[in-house]
Length: 56
Image (cartoon, rainbow, N blue to C red; front, side, top):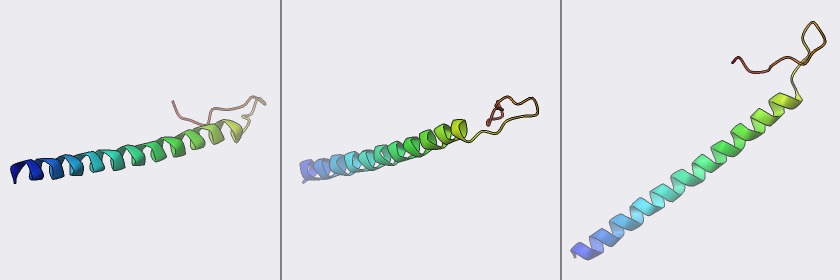
């Protein structure tokens, strides 16, 4: 009975880790797309130069 519970617990932990990693990959892809769009869509400042779209 104990080995069965350990296997089920291990499967649950691995499933949770897999779901979390997949969610983090999707978040990373969305952030990368927004970051790239920021470079493409940035506006020019008063001197005609391209301004920074981020604050730092």
